[in-house]
Length: 254
Image (cartoon, rainbow, N blue to C red; front, side):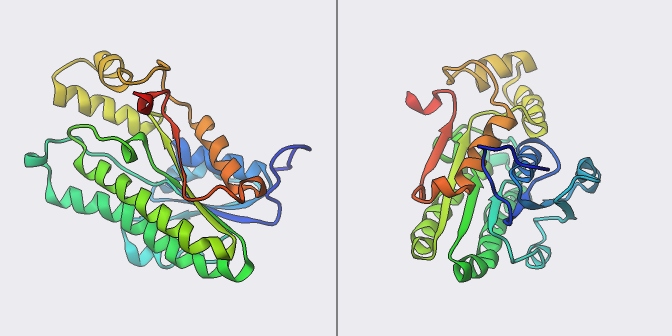
């Protein structure tokens, strides 16, 4: 995909985006490729990755990121890493399945650690690297019934800050983006799950649960998140590191 004059230019850079088959991940792949990067699109959903068939500068890597051995086989010569893959489970703590807790922590915290650990030597060697962790407003706040998701996102915030401190002398930045509810398949599933947990309709979940703490009364669009991610991957963000960028419509302003 050619770049447009005056826009972000990542020509010559290689990016790896997880959770790339849909939602925020797919939007990030498209945005980074449009900026000239060669992008590895990683997701367990091989069929979903088919959306990139024939797209210049995008190569798909069907991978289950909860399989840590598979994570350790992913490309290491990466200039830009976007840790985005995630799942959700809604349940009270006393009923939360232990195996689901383990899966979410492995996928959303251990896997980003393993990927970060894998790509840092290449970034350090060349004196440049950009790591963007797609966190959540739930990396800054908590909600009931989401123990594993909130814990994983809070852990990801800590990992991102440590990476920023260690990577600074090597030209590597690390940041989090923290959207509120984004219009994605994951959120659509959450609406149904929340409706069951709260005993209310799906329409009430959106209005009374998801958007109740938000000043801007709408879902965030995946393309908006991708624009912020792209900025953090570019040369103008070289002094931006160890930060968390709320895209929460005013949620954390309370």
